[in-house]
Image 1: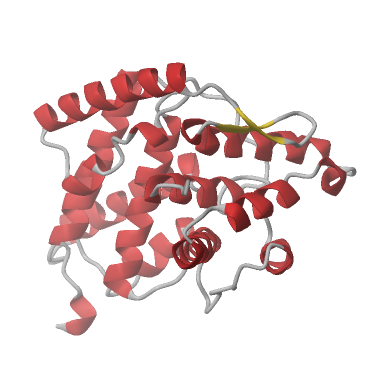
Image 2 (image 1 turned 180 degrees about the vertical axis):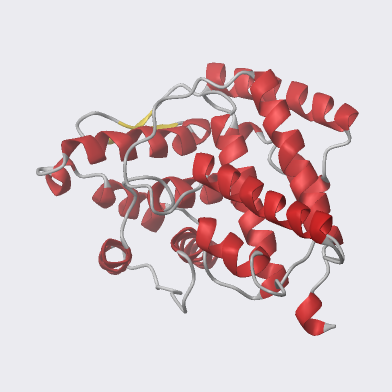
Length: 266
């Protein structure tokens, strides 16, 4: 039977729950119940909660029927009668994730089949070229994960957005924190001492470097992954050069976090 790939599920979960105007916690609870999908909740962040729920029900039933029911219900236009702009924003985001599965949500909110071959070949070409260039640049392995055609259907924006979310995931894994965006950065890097230190903090120069790294992280999250941002972002047709520069920066960030110490445990 037809199922979604892991990357497709991750993209769908992100599009529904981790974008401006995405589903709220209450909406997710109600929609999971309507689609007869067990809710893993347990304090998971929105994106991970949806991914876990979708992956579990697909594995259990070996089909994607319940996931499609969730998407169809979530994107019913009547749910957005008072906020039509939110419907269109969500529709654009989810269609990026659905495109390589050969599916799309129409303007009427109908789940329909589409011709995916052209977009697939173009996305595969983007992934191949991006992977080659980042390999030449020596990109961090966790950044290379996002050179996937599922994330490159329209252009490079989704791949960069997902790579930025990967930074937050790493910080949470290393520290045990549960926040996101600027608040996560402050909790991890701005304490005295911080949970994570990128140097010995032995002098003013080192302290300044720590503060600069903290500001850099906040800027990256604010640009791509600010959970407090409820307004739709302007469309960014990102070029390959843009994506490579941004992913190289994300590689640098990963390396500094990999090498960071935890002063509070010393």
